Length: 227
Image 1 (spheres, one colour):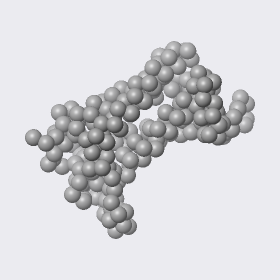
Image 2 (cartoon, helix red, strand yellow):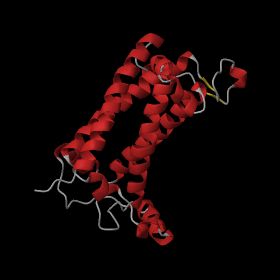
Image 3 (cartoon, helix red, strand yellow):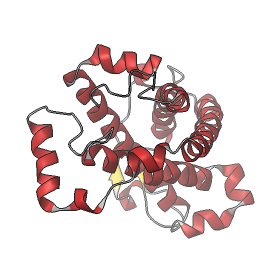
């Protein structure tokens, strides 16, 4: 039986659930140390910040008390797991043609009429693929943005603001507009990923959560309706 989700996709999906949860919660603990964002190379004065983040309660953070050193340890450990997982997923998806078969958009899908049809289908909670593939256009577009833009941006900006990596590869921070710019981009990318995750979970809940979760565990059947 042909599976709807390849083993590499399922393994990466659940690994990402764990990694993103730990990275987000430890990142909130790190944010509490200095909850202001700046552009450029340096920034220490709150009055010169372009954004002020809220102070996050301890039940949202790892560890569950303020500890910058412990939060950084958790963040760096799972950042490596996250980065290596993304690399292996990309290699596997090229090998099993997941990218080409399921995520590449076609010219006809970019036509305004087709895009509006996809938007209308989502508003009517009809999530089946509209063009004969596993995913419809909006799903391909959102997954593509996350996999090829947001996740690599998270890794690059995270490396740029890491004290160790910054000392070894200072050019990376400069390429991103300065260390504080990299930090701001890291927070922006984390916020967009959080919003994507919330939207993803809502769509799963609206389109039959048990079937969707079961398919992501067992692989499902290839001819099942796409989520």
